[in-house]
Length: 354
Ligand SMILES: [Zn+2]
Ligand SMILES: [Zn+2]
Image (cartoon, rainbow, N blue to C red; front, top):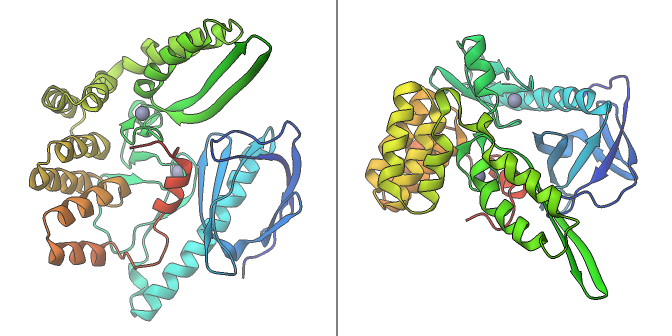
């Protein structure tokens, strides 16, 4: 049972499947360490299997009494966000440590409990049983960080993660697609908010610009978004060229993209994310054996990098390597039926992702 804490009060708005807030009015919420109360919905802490945080948005993975998984999301406003993140991380930490202790005790191996605090969101990351690697991945805020990094490297790494839209390691930012349409007497506004990388913003921004031209009201907004997608901030430093490589890959120009990634690897020899992108490129080329090796290299950089682990399992399956698949599942302690975090990732991700 979780311990109760001094209740935290905050305001929130529910999110729909498109990632938009469902009303203009903010509702009241509280959390006391045992129960999360969101308006008139009470969620016992023990029902929360996973939590993911993207900017001001929090997504929960919950198991209902009937055994189904549901994935509600809500946006926290103002002051409450930091406190709420802190509290949610504390509850996640307790649940994880409890689970892990039980598992290791059953195996008579409590000494191998190994954990690490996320540098950015302070969530507890459990690493028991995994090889020690230079990088660590945080499932809660989706960041990948080098444990022994310079201050400069830290601030760079903080900006990079998997894009919810295209699934590539990149520099995603909050991006709102906004259309204003005006048809004689019928008019309307359509918008959706996602977290996506500059490469993913570009196509959408042009579409938005063209779509908004007759309406005019959405036009300044489109221009701003278009500017953001091309802003030089995203193409400087040691990650220069990553957006271009990702764009090439998505356009099917796989060999030039792979060349770009090789160059990036010279500047960033230890980076599980870049290797993950290379792996996805090789999967597109149907070079599964080669892709398998690159996903393994990605896991050598970061032993708990879930995107690479999923890539590795997929390539092993493609090659019909059932023994290896089983070995990987055992090493990473993947039980059937247990949530791995992917369930929640799918929900954070818009449905139209390929
Ligand atoms: Zn984190
Ligand atoms: Zn993207």
